[in-house]
Image (cartoon, rainbow, N blue to C red; front, side, top):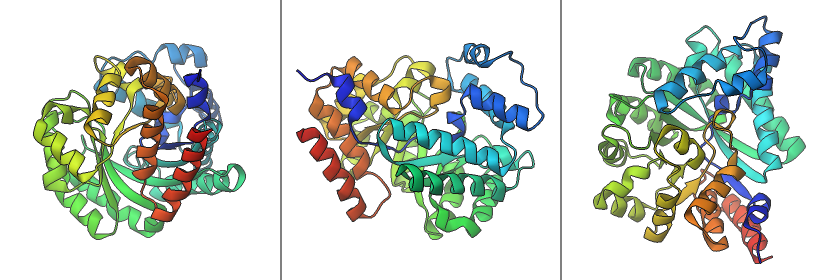
Length: 336
């Protein structure tokens, strides 16, 4: 009999919904605070973790933005990124497309170049040393102005070859996708691929998903569980083979459950559902833990688990030949 926890642990994986700033573990936060001459309102990492008490998106975001203030210099962004990629490598992640949020840093005076150069050096070292490949997706904060987002897009252009796509995150309430339509049109014209967060069970969730599909023309959707509330959205997402990057452990913190059973329903409907870890330092679950959560709560079998991983590799923003190499490794693992 297959031990599915062990099977999941060893399975080749792909991360498509991961916020680098959300991987800032308390131990590293203390280390960076000391390096940069800052004090933190906790005596140790355990007390800090105990303070991660949130039950919705706004309460999480308050702690999230406060925590990243320890990121000041290029080595800080390097250490953050390399620490995540090392953890991901240990969980058999072969490839990751990672979000980063430049605006909370540039908004407090950290130059854009400092942020991206630190991240980029860590990506290169992790690929050379560990063999894990990665690409960057730059997110705009939807609860800030579209003008600031456009300024950030322009700031990124000298580093265009280091960034594969752009996304939209942060507090969704009263911040619909169409608020950033002009920014995403400019991003597309510059050659970026497009994704947007459509968080779970938010105000106007299905309308926001419709805007992503019809007004913005995204290449995939982050979260997006509420497609299941509309037969028209189900049909359109399935027709386009559009990936939904779902994060069950974080769902359990900020909504009324992990939505694991909804993931199973998506698989049955032919929707390209995928599983990822979101902000694992805060939600206490990296990608393996998210797969285990989904498998156990939805009673998935090995074929379902492999399909979730296959969906992720199929949905990467990579050339077809690169996808095929990862898929061949996944198929060989499943066959064993």
